[in-house]
Length: 361
Image 1 (cartoon, rainbow, N blue to C red):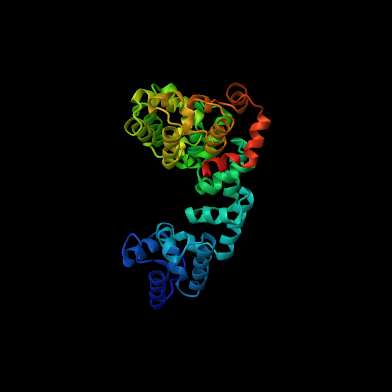
Image 2: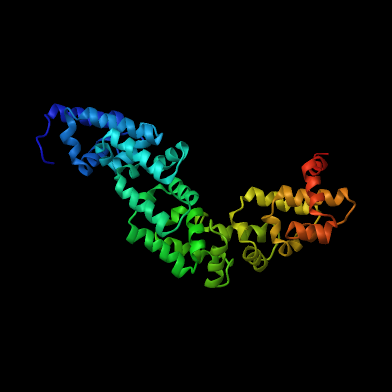
């Protein structure tokens, strides 16, 4: 870099500081290699080896403070992007405060975002403004959606608008044929898709067809439209769910796929929750697993307000209801057609806690 380099002894002290305070033993390379990478990627650090070393130390301390990371945890980011040390400590704090203010993050969300991607602090505030303005004004995210996106995918504040953000929006709108509202919902629920390669997104959609959950591309598009969180799920989730329904519950592969098409939210349920519902169906209701394809909503309904409450109410009222009747969609329809009661009566039973006492007994 331009400028007179500090004396060799000062350069040595810079290297010693980098190796003792910045680079950690868990770094991807040995200390010497990591030191070389840092100086190769940010040679201006050598100019600051003398009187400027205190400035570097202050910046490093600020990075640890703002990200909530220890020096050991931060070391990998510094090795990959050492220019972060060249940003003054006050500038780092100003940039963090600006991101927090523009995205509406609380303190915990800010730390979460910065710890996931310390590199966003290398972006000037006007660059952050352009990305936030695009998300809010062009994409149309609400304040809550914007907050969720930045907190969970902080890299969005430094991505290219034309080459990355616009292309992801075009993929959702043009290839998957999502309307504007669903585009926003999908991005808010799966914000990391904004910096995922389009080819990876395409493979994830194709996995719905290869697993049998979708019979065609059109089926796959409908599933994605119905499940905004799909791109945040593991790529093999559909295959795992079909296999579980088939191997553990005895549902045919064709019926398992149809259940996923009827209730796409089965894909986002935790496996433990699915197991609990299946056991309630067979052990408590005494139902035949062969009938599961007729009640896919079993795996997505509210356990307390549907399964427990309705079953307890019917028993307490001396009514015999089949599993399919208990899982009637809609409270009004259940009260009218199955329980023969008013919604107010069911609500009073729930508020009394009698259904919980029933199962506790």
